[in-house]
Image 1 (cartoon, rainbow, N blue to C red):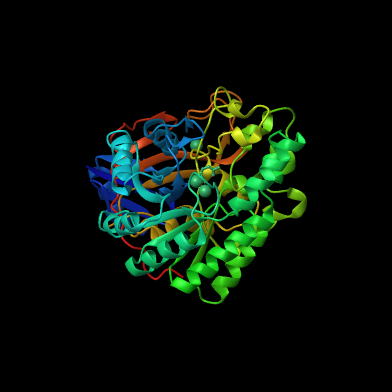
Image 2 (cartoon, protein in one colour):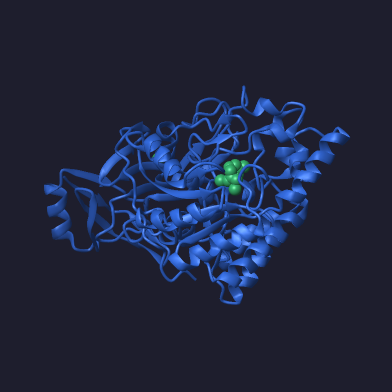
Length: 472
Ligand code: URP
Ligand code: ZN
Ligand code: ZN
Ligand code: ZN
């Protein structure tokens, strides 16, 4: 099957150019100067399918490096399955996700990874990989880290938060980092001081401050900055590369920027919710409504200027990637578990479908360039997680994962069924987006076209990832 994508502007981190793209089967086989008219006319005739991309951007498919489909949390499960969540991702122009397999104390790491494989196999609309969460650092799990690297799971997340659930103390973190340094794996960190936060939560509830807003105030930025700094220093001692997930505080990013300035392999990830939403407006919504936006790290105060600083750090390159941390819970029966006690609200926001659109608004408003958009949403996550150059770039030899994005289109978010995620609300209700995902191609197959879904569960394959190379 030959597909010819004609007349579009191909965007990469290094520039944008009018180019035609030739797909044979599942791969891109050539990018062509549109000036070569005889050849283009020939291909237009002979291709099995021709996609007209004139006036539109042709992007590498989005790579969302941080999702939690069907994640168990607080007595319930994230409401998107691999099937519904990856279909929603496809609608939004994401063609690869990296989800988290979770080990908790008492479980064999390899068994938990096998469980995640079982959940995802045959269900996904797009390609997927796994990070492994190590919730219990001991000699068995450290050994398992080396084994998993050989199986294409090359990154491991640890938690400085959630004592009694996922939490690792500094000694355990140090050991895991030593193993990461030895194997070349990437160490990912949830950097919040969970021991101190648990005290603040208990005190808040005891005072009667039980509304969702107080989820935010009991996880202050100081405890994100402190944990981020500590993680950086532990990584420095061990030589492990460090990837700090879902950074929301400007002070935490200052720590990351300083470490990078010193030449240390440290990377920051942020998420659309930290760029657009806030403690005052969303977590502080009337009644129990703020529960929709309970996630950790929490939304930060707009008055403190975190959002503007996060955009600035995207421009300087100290924020390397934008992922969603997609972890949806419905209001009914899920978020509602925390009525009268915010600490029982399942943590997470769903937005796997909206990341490309939301980040494109940064291009529209002049906060980031077109090229930076593709860099942080597609290319760098592919590179960082060992999938480049198969993923993350429109180039011969790459998988034919493409998004045809219409800058003159329009997308309304929220108000009824405008999204495909399995959620009974939208975290971005009322957002009006300049731009539209027109066509999505996954390994050569058109899976979304003109508002029609043409994908299928099971098309998506497991991506065996390599170690990331030359990180900084
Ligand atoms: O609130 C969040 N982020 N839920 C997902 C779990 C995590 O810590 O990433
Ligand atoms: Zn986390
Ligand atoms: Zn997460
Ligand atoms: Zn359109």
